[in-house]
Image 1 (cartoon, rainbow, N blue to C red):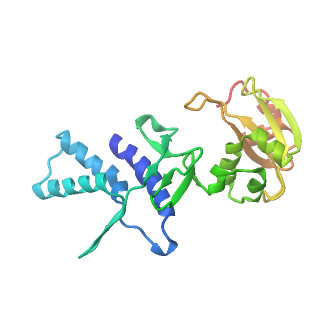
Image 2 (image 1 turned 90 degrees about the vertical axis):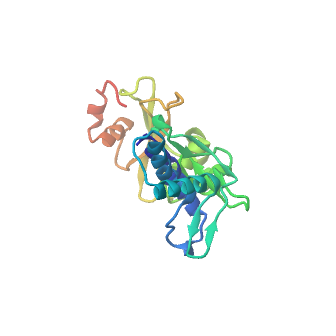
Length: 252
């Protein structure tokens, strides 16, 4: 299942989702994926090559044909008398997925489209999340303030960095404290800017564990407007009081 899971996550879940974004809404359901079926074709080809199962002649012929198609073309649709075939993307950029110990990857490009075709049809992706073009090419506090999608907003803030966003958006600091569950790091509580929906606050914290590249990611968590202190906000995210959170030895 290693081949199946790795290729399915990389091609079927990640790439196929992005490719679907390039299709007109009127296309409807896409019932065949071509190269994105590599997880299925690769799985059966692997167990055949390893001698784990034997196929009949017709099954072997079909698997050979599908293997060639998967390696040679993009999406394709077979009908009774005609077959529609699409080119592969002209560029496709990925990075290791956080749970990619088995080789799984996800789409990402910091400064350009992660997936692009020769006709300039393209999709922008930030660490696996499909985002509008402005998030990658021209993120700003003003655009972030107008964005209603929480995930897109998160990606845009990560692009410019929390310090820059706080400065440009003019966020008001409510409280800050040392993070007892994360020695050497601070908790900061800010009022949410206008346009973020229901009134609330943002708790800015540092991840308790390192990313794959060794960095410690800063992230913002929405908390209720009534939370008075940074410690209370951190405790609220765990369902405990601020005084209880202050006694934590370590969080992850």
